[in-house]
Length: 137
Image (cartoon, rainbow, N blue to C red; front, top):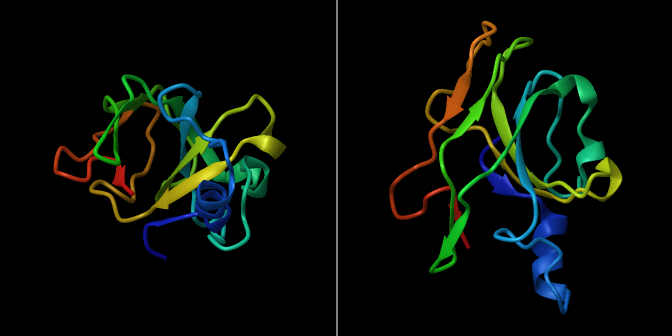
């Protein structure tokens, strides 16, 4: 698989009068994913409940989110005391408090440092400082 946006998220951007994901106003989270326990389906998966619980190794919230020139950026994200299966991917999603309405945004599996095997310590995702930051639309 390669990095990509979930199709329902892209459709939502193009068809909704009001955006359903407000990156600098909503709670945007990141999962560390065991790809051996989750088969990504960018075409059909739309909400966080499409990802099996066992595939979600750790969760953290994006902080210091900024948007400039259609580019999303945030502070590097630290996941505390991570243990469990090997991590091969990252999923960014909007947390509504209910998995069945929490919109999946994108799947990233080609980031520097992936895969990583947790050892009980912290894992920090260092977002790109280049022109595309986390992602550009």
